[in-house]
Length: 149
Image 1 (cartoon, one colour):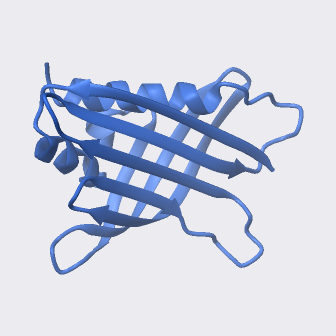
Image 2: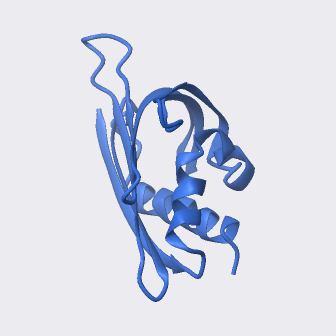
């Protein structure tokens, strides 16, 4: 197992409600970040319509690492400004993890923060330094572009 972490933050002129709507619409991710999220589908929603379980295919292509990850996520949406996706293990012995947490806050402009944390089953000789930050930056940039100028 190799640990992968990354973070990114930025601002957008879009209101916080628009940013949160974009980020909680998991099934829309492939439309604004197709290089990373190849497929996504919401499997379950709560009574308020927020996604609670989703499936996604993530494509990682950084340096020597090129791999597609088919992931099942537990999704938690806090209408106050957080969307958290946590990989659901396949079995009790499955130690891989992939967590994505978006935080949205308002002010004169809307601030979006993204944190990634993962333990991935990749060969030990593959260097992953900087891969998490690069992925986080790519996802954040795609989100802010999707939200407009």
